[in-house]
Amino acid sequence: MLGAAYLRGMSLPYLVASGMTSNAVGAYFQAKGWGAARQTMQGEYRVQAGLVAYQKPIAALKQNTLMPKQFMVERELRIERNYLLSGKATVFNADTGESYTKYVSMYSEELRSKSGWTDEYISGTVVAKYKPEESISNIDWISVSHNEGAPY
Image 1: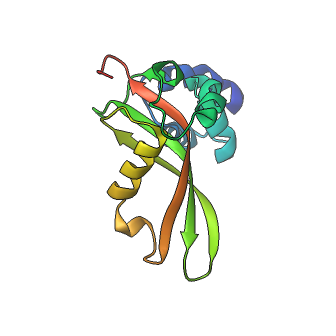
Image 2: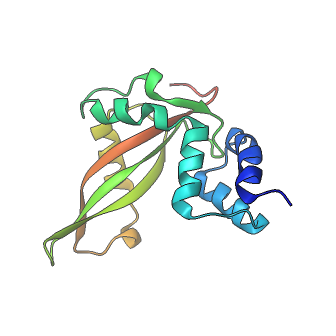
């Protein structure tokens, strides 16, 4: 039988092109018995989707600058939205005074700056995702995908 890494490598381009998210791809591979550590599969997905190439330019972009089109990956999204963003949120707990990092993602209809998308995420976040004493102090967006054929 072929190795799991080989099978993932052969099918990953098709799954990414079909618009599957990294979590959906990971679940698909696990169901097939081709799984690996989540971090390994997420890394393989990010490389295949082209998200790694734009991580540093997005990080270097000023918070209030409109996101340039050349920093976005064009792909077919599974949901009828214009943008899919992922990033690392810094969550502050007022009771303990401690902060932790959490990976977050969201869909958006509007082209915005990084700070604009952060405000949109915070205002649209479901209360059940965080404890009452927790607040998001910052989000470092690391990837932006644009829905192929959708308006900017």
